[in-house]
Length: 239
Image (tube, rainbow, N blue to C red; front, side, top):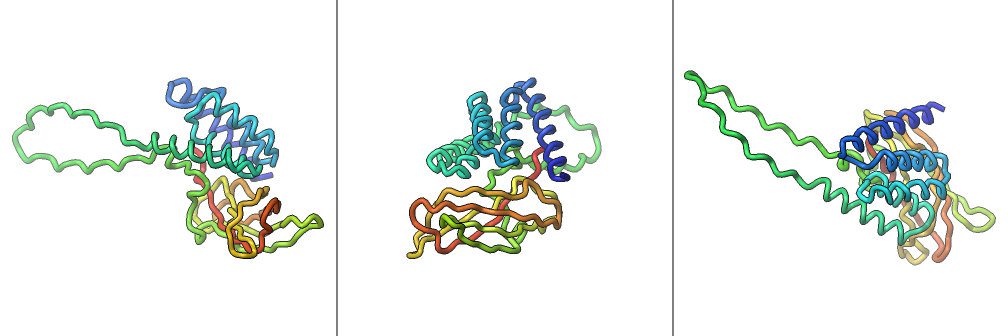
């Protein structure tokens, strides 16, 4: 219940901030933000098909909406639509690169002559603030495993032969994190990498030092998964 309450506060903050930006002409429209927010709520509940529809509406309204593009790519991956996943991941990366291009600095105006006496010490240059795209990185650019990592894991096969992987993930950082994902790297019996469809269930956010359970359902549609590795990743809280 506490995590759902935190999610509600975060999503409300995203919606309010997005509407404000839209009114200033600096971001996606308020309607696009509403569809994105609805899609993220559905994604948290595991309603992938409905989340996909809402996020697609957000992207149609705002094609350069980085958060909607990257979240939609994640939904496509969870639903096994790998062609769509790769295409939208590429689009999200292109938007991020465009948003990260440094803006041309205006030519400084000439200052009036300094009064007699010692000149004031020069000001230290201000550090460039990270862009919103840089703060809200796509989930695959998460931290090293030592920061948010898998502490326990076990696997078993169900009656139909599909693989179920369960475990625990821990936030070992000093800050709360969001969009926690445990990525699967799978291999066949002869060592070739395979990319089977999978469904992920896990925590949306983790407080410092907190642990939570996760599970992955892996569908063997071609090569059977015989060996796998897991890596946890996350994103910073949306501001």
